[in-house]
Length: 229
Image: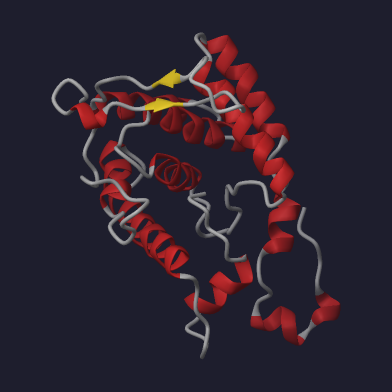
């Protein structure tokens, strides 16, 4: 998201402080935003305060971050808080999605409560992502906030079974189209149908594992490698 171009391996090298490893300026800012956002929600937990804390941590990118990090939008108070998202592939305003004018903390609470009452499957985790993205609670960085929050909900940090976007550009484009379907859905039934379509474009856990860099032990014993299911 936000035109992040670096690969998993390039990012890992920077995180490991390898000599000479660096990312483009935009990618560096997005990475630091993500690291601080993850740290914030790990500290506060998966709740409305934690979700707000993620966005509040987005301060490194002048182009991609909100003017008021962590501020819940209120278009009645601040016209700049109004958000309209173009959903037409041709770029016209036809069928554009208008996010709620006012977002309150209870709106985030409702998403958290719904997840906590669910079976907490990966589909439920992606529903958190889709719901927060559709709500557009902040001025900017909403999908990034939603992805970090969804991973926090599923507690993917320890097992590294992360919720990640499609690696393939075509799948990524289809994913975004289906996310737009979720945005414009007017009923719970239509949202569920859109979420089903979203799930078909996502990488499997096996594919995610294949994109993770090898550990030191795996590099030393390549014959012992096994693909995780």
